[in-house]
Amino acid sequence: MRTPLSVVIGAGGTGGHIYPGLALADALRRAVPDAVISFVGTERGLETRLIPRAGYRLHTVDMIPFDPSLGARRYLLPAALLRSGAQCRTILKEQKAQVAVGMGGYPSAPVIVGARLAGLPSLVHESNAVPGRANKFAARLTPHIALAFDRSRAHLAGGERAETVGMPLVGPLAELDRAGLRPAARRALGVPDGARLLLVNGGSLGAARLTEAAVGLAGRHRSRTDLRLLIKTGPAALEETKALLAANGGDAVAEAVPYLDRMDLAYAAADLVVCRAGSATVAELATIGMPAVLVPYPHAPGDHQTHNARVLSDAGAALLLPDPQASAERLDALVTPLLDDPDRLAAMAAAADPGTHARAAGLLADKVLALAGHPSVGHHLTMKESA
Image 1: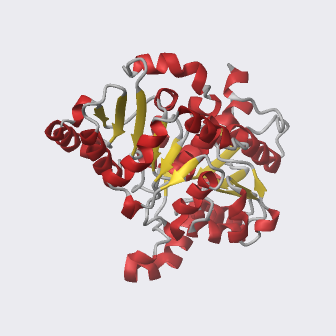
Image 2 (image 1 turned 180 degrees about the horizontal axis):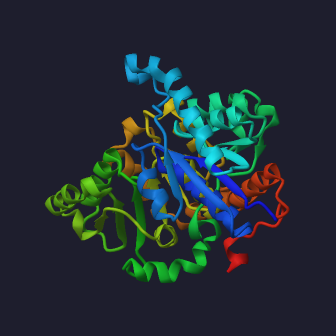
Image 3 (image 1 turned 90 degrees about the vertical axis):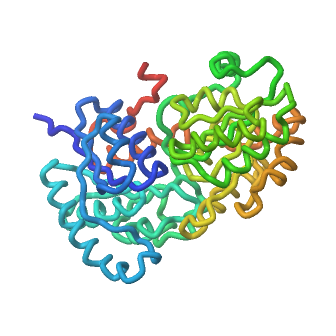
């Protein structure tokens, strides 16, 4: 009797680690429908909401961040890693796991430690152009390393043996046809015919700097009939943002929303995006050919968002705007000429290299299946093929 495939994925903290983990889980399920897929995280991150909502089991362990800003608490890290690694070894045995996968972020390192303790094969996926501390550590414990961006190879011990597979993308973004969906998307979002749409995306929790600049920009262009702004604020800043737009007249051209359930519609309807430079966002923009102004989060470990942004800005597919300069005035000077120049927007879209991001979940699933010795290796399906 065949043993069911069982894989445990470590992913937590932020959506930039969780969503690629979910994309991998979905790809494994498409390849092996009866696979047992579960996750390891902590009680502190977004994983407590996102993973159960996606239909996967979440195991939690007692891990703390790899973060020098913890002060004296950072000296607790070795003990926390050993304790949570032992917890992961127990989880792996209880799940009868054949493979452990670490998707980055501090909750994933104990999974690789647990796999080493349990004698199981493991794989690390690094999503950023500059690896985080957790993956720099975890990559020393496994010979199997996968990368979203080739330029991160130089920053990892054992990077010479890593394989660049791209960034696993969830849902319809992996196969989004912007041009084909554009008319329906603009109708769904109420964008008038002939108007340009600027999407300001602060991420799942919003970004105060981007929202503030967007409010000022909307006020500056409140009399235009050919421009619309869609500002994703995050839930906490929604009411304040609406009040500020009403006060400066920006609500004539801008709509503030707490979140966007259909990012595919937002990307298809928009002409230009202003956003942070998380690895998943950069991969999405590259895959779909979305022109962007990228404002890297300045406190990201190792300044990895700036390195992520340069993947697109070096190719001519995006402009890079440092966070301290992201005022309404500076944003206006950048985005207004772009929005008024369709040819330049088209050139930026064409400059984006889609790479393998759209296929990354399947490619990574193949590597996991190979480590498990599963006969379905090489037979992963894309969402379109499985429909």
